[in-house]
Each structure stands twice: as structure tokens, then as C-alpha cells.
Length: 170
Image (cartoon, rainbow, N blue to C red; front, side, top):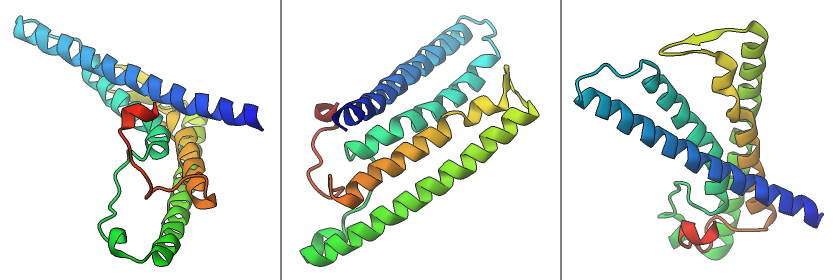
């Protein structure tokens, strides 16, 4: 069981590192695109399309890690004034809702991925790319987000607990 936990942690952190790599790639593409424009040349047409894909991949790859380190957006203004027992119950309801919505997104995106793969549709923008590439990170990331909220639900961690610097949890 310990091995599975370590492999899972490695997967979560590995996806976060990949997210960092792809967002840095987007930064480079934008800098190159703007520099080419400033020099008076026509930049490649695929830059904008690739950056759009990268933003999706960045979001999906980083999502499980952000839930793990409590770096995602949530509002605790209401819960901070509640008594501890009520706060605990409300937290469990929130976790269950997050798990359900993540699993719905996982199933729907898996269906879209499968349909796009079967149909062989091409996304035509600056670069022709198979449409299934767009949906590729969504099912896994959604499933991992559900697992992370599941960790909160069963009591391994608490979303409303200590939220240290995101970098120290890396």
C-alpha cells in the first residue's frame, strides 16, 4: 500500500512539473511571437493555437496538485465563523459535491475523448491537430481531483486546515 501511495504522489507531483514545463513553453512561444512581430515579420500561425492548448493542459495537469496543496480557489469566509461541528458537516458536504462534480466531468470528458478518437476529427486552427488531443488530459485530471477531494472526505487531510506556502508542499 505504501508503494501505491508513493507512486500516486509521484504522479501528482510529476503532472505538476509537466504543468510548469508547458506554461514555460507558452511563455517562450509568446515572447518569440511578440519579438517576431516587433521585428516586422509575420509570426507563425500556429503559436496562438498552441498557447490555447497549453493553457488547457496547464490547467488540467496542475489541478490535482493544487487541490493537494490547497492552492485552489475556495471561499472560507462563511465557514470560519461556524462552530466546529457544523463546520465539519459542511466540509463533508462540500467534499462530496466536489467529488461528484469531478467524476461527472471525468465521465463526460472521457466520452468526448473517445468520440473524438473514434471519429478522427481534426481541430483546424493555426495547426491541424486531432481533436482528441484537446480532451486527452481531462479525464485523468478530473479523476485525480476527485481522489484528492476523497482524501479530504475520509479525513486524510482537511481543505480548511493549514494552507502553507504552495512552494513548501512541492
